[in-house]
Image (cartoon, rainbow, N blue to C red; front, side, top):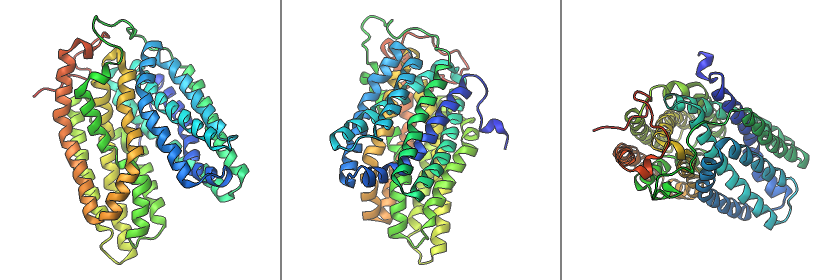
Length: 427
């Protein structure tokens, strides 16, 4: 496979990718080690950890919009650097906190800064990369993130194997340092040019996205599709262990299939998306594919053979990651194209809140649905994917029409040039 399919072109895209690579390496180590560190070293119960994470991500989902708005007003590069440093400081504080109130505050700061960083980084990408290349660049970043997570997870695995306080502290220190390194890389990027968000037409409020109902519908449908995230990290491991005869190594194998596939093929799939029409079609196809994946996952519980179950699970994982990549390719284009040019920060903060919401409600919803209902639960989940994917096209057309008709939504920034890949959908 050509290297260009994985490594983004030089300039701003490559520097953005390097910054996210640094973040993701640290995050990979953090995700693998944090739960055991908080329970074994800090001495917290699983219930206390879960409650803190739930509160933190709930606040993060809310904080993304105002922090994105701040990026619009003050510049996305500066806010991205600030949020990266705040995230690093929050992770560093985990090395020292031993009391639950301090831990709760640190988790909330961490989650809010992460959501603010995501919004500012998306706004920075939109400001530095021309519209026709944004989805491709975002695909490069996603490939980079998966590669970094895999490397970081390997480092975290070493800490798990050693199972000592020093090893866990080292893994978290790597994560904290990674955000400082990322901030330095973001500092080397130029500040985007464009109309300041403070120059608004008369009657246009500050947080326009909160009154943009068509965009909210699009974001809600995207959130439903993002339920594949807790499916992979929470529901599937429990399903494999409790409801199938597959060997334990299948859980790791599915994660490897997912990570490697995104690294190798995400950019290729994203190259087929060039505007709202093709983006809506990609999300619709993702709904079909994710429904099929749910059906195959459900079938993995029907047989008594461990190897048959493992083969079905691996086949379903291949189908699922195809749906994931189709969704990402279409979703990124939609999120960028429907946002006013001078308000990308607040719109990306709102759109990106779907990730926090999926992580917040997804584990409980999916485990109850799949583990309690079994085969029929998978059918319900697949139906949700199909319904959301099918509804995305009409929702995008309505949001695009409102964007073109309303000055408050259209924004004060320059309109995309014809042929740029962000034309309104027709028909």
